[in-house]
Length: 494
Image (cartoon, rainbow, N blue to C red; front, top):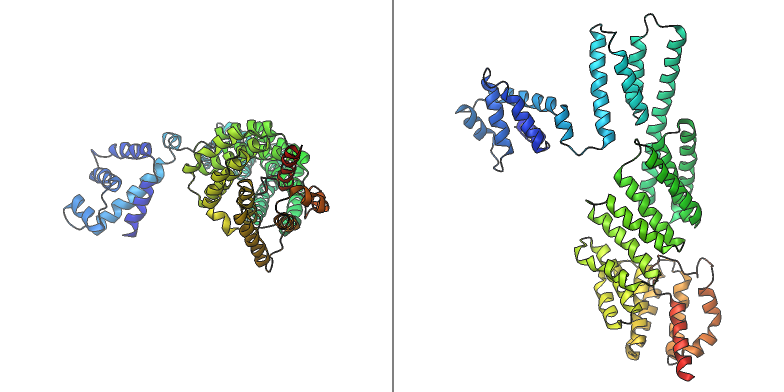
């Protein structure tokens, strides 16, 4: 029973072309082998949408239960499946990366050459090993490289000059060092990226990141491996961005991009698209929004079958258009929100729409969109607080003073409640104090600005607890909005 499930799972993993190759291969034995015909019948039964049980299939094939014959048939079919997946036509029917195709083909060639060497053939297989070694180096397939060099050394052991033998020994030693460095670099990269994705703050993994970079740099200098270089400069970018050194981050990302463009071993469409997207994101911090838009749009070409990643691209595009005050295009980017399945991302997009509506004077729309961004309320800090602040700003713009009073009281209670367990950024506390003062002074913006000038100076400073951060939930920059109200009041008074 388990053997039938096993062979069915194998067949279901084959492409349609591979199934046809399998049937064609089995057809060669039909005339002289009744089992060949039964194997074809079994393949067709297992590819049908109907699900037949163990006994039903036996009765169809033999007219009765025949456990022994059926078990042999299943095992022969399984062996045949493993044979056909190595055929060139079969490999081409899969969407494997170029590197994986080359890896499989080199392993096949190495096995073939080793078999001929065991048969005593020496004259014709030397060039085969040379070919394998050349491409194994090019694609950084160090495991294959070590095996091929050892096979070549065995081939040349008889009658080879001592110097040539020693050269191959040195090559083997270096290839083994590269293999160890390659494996350990992958483990380091996997471990630190998992740590980064599961951490809330940079200080939780900063020491581990620096240690990972130091170890990776040592491996890169030793091997000059493109893949290790990709890992290294990707991690360096993470370090630079967290230290707000965005020029260095851009330089590091350019190195990653160049590595991918020059190296077939490290390049994949997904990696290249990700580098373009990271460059687009980094240019937001450099305030080069036009370049960010160009890079983000270019990255889309490499994520055609990755809908969630395409939504992340849209998020980057929104920030670029929003910050350059191109609200028409930022709204257009958000128009595909109905196609977003991830609830938290959809909620974030609703919040973006609310910010966009606010900036274009559609305050009622902004309130409705904020109400729809329910998932943001699960965030007990930045997003939720900014959502509440934006609701207050909308009510002020609509002259809904009773609601303003209630919303400010609710914000104060909310901040007091969550501050018992969380450290609240002082910027939010200051904004709450300004809003409370504004309410007490009957929305007299000039009076509040004059009284709280030191608060506004702090909000415009570069001190960590007070400064505004780009790409933070505070898309409507509070002191900037407040100053626009001063201008409006002055114009009225004049």
